Length: 166
Image (cartoon, helix red, strand yellow):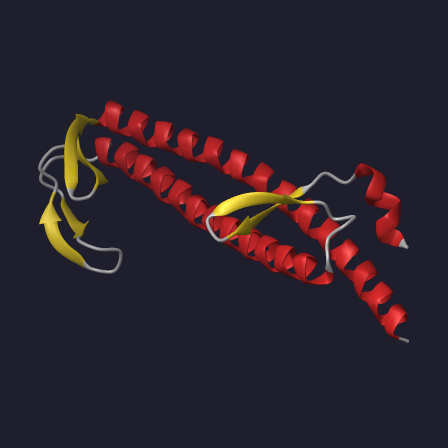
């Protein structure tokens, strides 16, 4: 059996039971426990993967914002431009200043900075998010390995059950 060759190296897999986490020894787990662990790990991998996608989009937005600030600093005061109100709605306007920017720091709060600090803010946010993404990618990798191990044991337990019933 493929799963039994890994049994000597098996660490208990954390499994949620209502609101607390418990460990599941895959070598002694029942078929039902393995199915629950499989479903839970699939949900976790999916959720973490979706979070990675959202963080990747945030990195892209901050990178674009930093580039936009750099480009703005090269423009001249009074030049016509389109001002974004949302991602898809723009209104005509004029550049009032090229040395100051308003940064949206969340929940409706804005901070005025000079362009250098604005660019630096965007770079720091990109680095912060990328650091978190690396940690999350490690976690996703760990969860995927746990999922594969649980699936190996699930297949083996299913075969054992089928053979016992035959």
